[in-house]
Image (cartoon, rainbow, N blue to C red; front, side, top):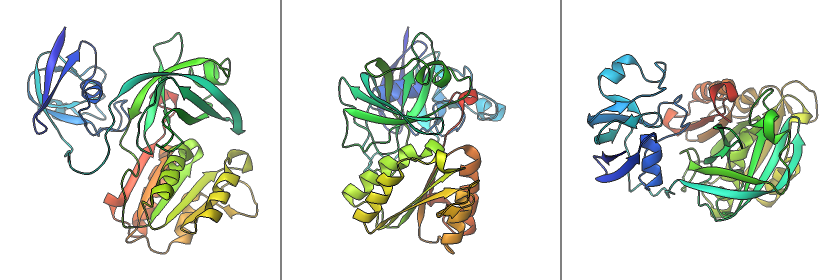
Length: 340
């Protein structure tokens, strides 16, 4: 059984198959709706049901309150239609914002690189059977063979490389995707399946203000994509990249970014260690940013990593008077939250 879903302000419709979320159906039909995590935790994909009924499925009361349900709000990434629907996104959608939009598709590819690059971190590179267009900062959902599990991983390569995708994978102890597969049996030459692109984090178009980019752990992946794309297309007057880890064992791609900084005078790279003394910056990465910038007024920021680091970064930047609307964030949750 299928149901027609119409997005009222966009005057677009999609036919949603049984069991498929409203968000996925729209994205596969090239109808853009705001979204980030697609796991029901961020709430950025909320829609207002103007007519019809939905099954909220596993929508949590933390993200979607009982009061919101009563008022007709649903999570697009969780809800499925029980009848024909007319919806409008809660977050405003501007079809003329200049941001490229890419339809969600299923993809297959072959593993061509699988290297250990830091403590409990592997670089996974997949050669695609067919190209996938995406924006810097977006991610895919990679399926774990023999299960109904999929995990999210951001592309670390720029959008100019549509046929060869790079991912940075952190091992989660006991994780189905990592301990059970990517760090156990996955090998070069094997086939992988995934869907993408997903998410709205990133710097897809030019901006006037300099940008501070703060990464914790493998949160470096989407920022690497953003930096390479922004430098290639002159998207920002200055880029300041910070990467935080506990010790030197947690850092990777250091030489790559040092070379990039030498090639581009408007790009700065600052790795930071919180639990080891060395010749570089020491302390929490957010504290290093605070020390380097006495004011962040007129700047923008892109933060990616564990929730605690992202929250600390947001607070630090606001203390330095950065406008909240200029702070862009992507949280990497562990497997217990059905994330990367």
